[in-house]
Length: 577
Image 1: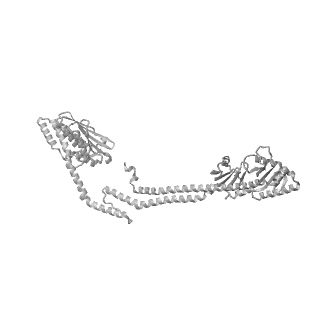
Image 2: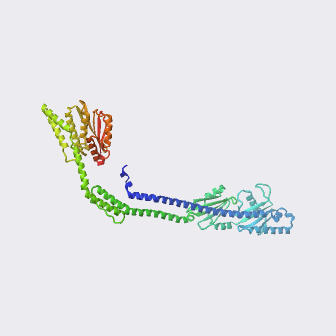
Image 3: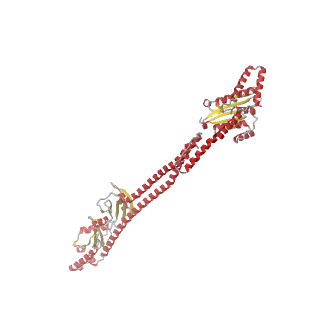
């Protein structure tokens, strides 16, 4: 993997910041989770508390009205009321009056039992009287019919009749639509203003509203009726005893709490602005935002601190090492703070001083020794080639073959001029190929044209590439010596060049058959382990790797012609070619 694609991987400062953020991030995420959980829990508890408050109030109100209803049912068995309703003819006027007065006392006791009661009425058709706790008046047939109709229709125990609230009971009890008429009706009238007054006790601010809504009547704390469709759903679905939800009105968002009572067949709903309910949570939110801001500030401050006291000294040290890599031994670095970096800087400066004193004694001597060994290997000339060349010259001179003699001597001159030139360790690829081609022509003349040599064209784009001297000619020499020397005819030597992206290949192959498969495998293995007995092959392999880096060198294979195929690989990307 190319590290340049991921520069952050070798940047200590970025790694340090990343690790610090990775440490703080779980804490921050945990804080967010705790914050959200706390806010959700508080909202749920607040909603639950409001729901409980409304439900408890509505339950107490229902309990109060049921208590009044029990007093009403108990009054139905009153002797005076039953005598007036069933056997008025058995009493004279004085007895009737006494019975009415005693009945009024009973009704007044019921009236005084609750602040919600306006009055208690006894409608007695037999004596054509309407007796209340305070007054005695003539029987009102219209009111009787209204009360009778309300009792016969299903719904709430508390009925609205002409904008007045009543709980009525008849004796004897009659079924709806029955022909039997009751002897009397006992009705309790309740005060809407008192109910409204008690509802207002549950309101803490002018923005809140409490409504008691029945299909027949509505009581609101501020007189305004909010268009809330949820109430109709609660009235139609009696199983939803308590419900809390958030709704939007014209100008604000409210938390609405609903409680249903089967006794009243009504919904008690409370509306509180969300901003008022959850106002205490804003402080919690502000503290959390402060925590987040403080975390960011800590990261920034720590980053600046790490950059100044850790990353910047390391960066200076890295820059100094890079200058040393470019053989700049005069660089010196200083550190003001008295810490570990001052010691490292001092040791670094001391190391450079020692390097400067030793570089001439050791480094340069090793380079000169290495270069001398390379020149010695490069200057090696096969004695057999030299002897045979002179024998060929002698034969051409005896035979008077002046034309070939001139060409051959010219080729030998060019050849020996190249291999004896010592002022340059590297030559252009074009010169190296030219020398190898001259050598191949000399060998063709030497073997009396028993062998055919094919040289491919060298691409123009790589002609000026600098390569070590004498890397191609020894390979061709090896092909003649071990592959083609024993052939009496039809020898073939082929040299090709391939330029593929960042790699240059020079391929030398022959059709010699002296090399067995076992020998080829052994030779390839020895070359890979730098243990080749043939000094020339190993020399070329090491020089190419030294020049062009890993992945370069010699590759030995079986040729398609039948002999040995030697590929010289040079990684041009390592040298930026």
